[in-house]
Picture 1 (cartoon, chains in turn orange, brown):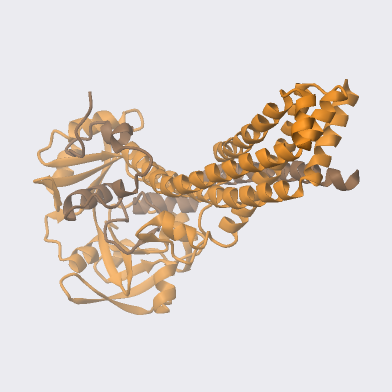
Picture 2: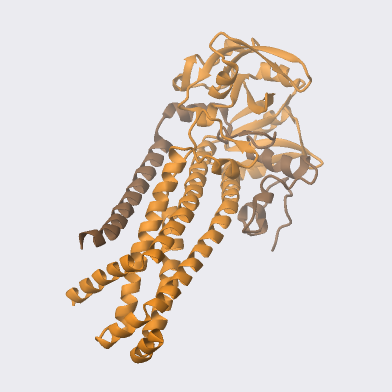
Amino acid sequence: MLRRHRNLFSYSLECLKKYRMRTTVILIAFTVAVSMLSSVFFVKDGLEREAEMSVAMAPDITVEYLKGGRLLLTPSSYADAVKKIDGVEKVAPRIWGYAGISVYTFTVIGLDLSSANVPSSVAATLAKGRFLRPSDAGTGAVVVGQLLAGMLDLDVGSSMILLSEAIKARKFEVVGIFSGQSSIYTADLIVMSIEDARRFFEIPEGYVTDVCVYVREDVFAEEVAAKISTLPNSRVVTRDLLLRGYKYSYASRGGIYTTIWTILLVAVTLISFSQAIIVGHESRFEVGLLKTFGFTTLDIIEIRLIESMTLGLFAASLGMIIGAVYSMWFNAAGLADILLGWAFLPRQFKIPVHISSPSILAIYSATVIPLLFATVVPAWLNAITDPEIAMRRAAA
Amino acid sequence: MRKILALPVAALLMFVLVLSMNLVSEQAWSDAARRVEEEQAIRRVVGLPSIAIGTYYGATRNPLLEVYCTSLYDVPGGYCYILAAIFVDTPLRDPVYSRTIPGFNMTAQRR
């Protein structure tokens, strides 16, 4: 029994060699399609995981101010009102926004240094200098990311001038530069005191951009969020909502490319199908002969199954290896720009890549199974024909 | 015979390589989540939920609520950032778009 299967295995491998053109067409087409598809999957999963990690560190609840459905500055008094709500552990008013330099947009963060609990471990995220201290409030001291430091050739002690929306130049002094290791998060950051941010954005006293709320561990954030949402004009966003939103955002963008490559995969499957039919005609005599020698229909199908499995496994695995190398070592050049839309990844860091189990399973399923169908069906049609008729037709 | 076996053997080896890459990657990410206390600390201090994907458009960085809000409210005809990207699905089918968000009337809710 085992010997029989071994013989069928050897015979199917011989067929791969004999029908070289079909083997080559299927291998090349599937490898190309899978390499790009897998690259999208790996990059998308990586971005999702990074977003997940960042969101996990975000405040439990963010409160903003809406008027007529639009975002406005949040009155600082909201922080005091939120503080009184049961279950709230800490409230941190925040001022943040964007600063444009060249074609890039940087994120300016104003921290309340008097109340921000900055752990000493933050120093390890810096390549040079130090993090902000309470005494830096209002002095124009900033900590910048690698992207800005590289662009403006900044070092600790350097001065830089940012142009605000009010077209006013503000001078800042760099006291620290974030390291490359944390650049996936810090590359485009400019961190300063909340007083400096207020001056830079010209935000009037008594207002902040938003209010961060941290709830006690024994309390559900959603319960507190529901209470906060009773404040007039408040817009309450929980961390869970942010996470779902990010995941959705990357999944949707990945969806475009995935769709395109899925269409390509379908086309490739059709090519395989047509190749199998052509070869099916060529091998009709052979199948008739085999059946005359006692091969059953199942044997013929088994031969084609082994062929397809070998081809599918080879092409899908090779495609995924190429996709992983393309993403990890070549930063998914060209592809990342499409996946990120209007956004860009600073060249200072590598694109995050996650070779996840669901993606691998999905890619194998999307390649090997259609290939099995595309090649086994024509083989089955040949195999159920009467051997004598098959040989006569092939000879005609 | 040896030559013929090259293809299935290579297929098997590459399959094992893919599984190994998968294991290494999963391990690396699970370490990354726990890893670097300092990296977690800076994220906690800054409090922005997104990674440093910069932008050519002022609505695409942190926090996501601004992405929603700016793209949906502040830009004329602005279903541009997230919704335009939906190619294979409709937003209403996703729970993100159908769950009630206080003060955020993004879509009508289907019941």
